[in-house]
Image (cartoon, rainbow, N blue to C red; front, side, top):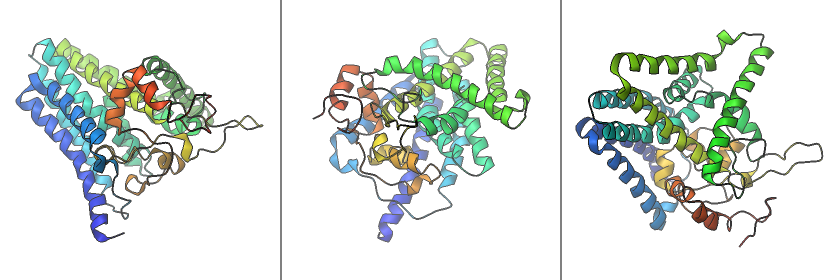
Length: 348
């Protein structure tokens, strides 16, 4: 790989700083139009990746670079600043502005905050994992920090995994199933961990993170009124929607076969949908190189490779829009499900 390719492979991740900064500026200067700005950014990314073929490929893997994890860590104060600005903007605003600013903030806390929390949670550094817990607690979904690593990575692309969507299941049917199922699984797994290590629930980070989120909402209600609570709940809800909608996309209709011993086959390249679109991959820490992530969960995001597994029609930004319209999603995706998948759908 040429040195220019290596440089580009690294520098493109700086784009991840631009979106929260632009949203922060929008919330501070014109909160009434913050939601429009966030939605237009979403449409712009989806449109560019959907109709500009040159954007369908990201640069190859870069060299190990110890500075790149700091882009993930830098997001934590940026997100904190955005949420603080949102609270200030809505304190005396009308309710449409409260909802709009919540949507704009949730676009960042969900698309990037949760994505970066996911990457930090895979780190071997305890401080990084703590930052992941902080980001997930800020959107009221700390159970992800248990279920994703100890549940989803074990059961992905099986019917036992609440975060894997089945063929023919719409996004809107999947959402309540995955939220309820993932939450139940997280608390069950945490209970098993505590029992295994002979610890009590007061030593559970999941319990304390949940208490902290509820206590913070009560603090907002007591000091600033329901507008602040409404803003925080809206950004949390939209962030979680983005997380679970991406989960829906990542393994839709793909299933690992079960062996004679009742165990699923090892996770392979064909058990996750991939996309290599450069804008989304740059903003989302190569999350769309999803097969390689599941096969090598500890691999740093800059080293994830574009594998020749099942390919999405476009990046996550566009696929979220497609998935929101189930008939369109089914028409596009059912022709792409590999013939080797045990789903029984017709193939092209």
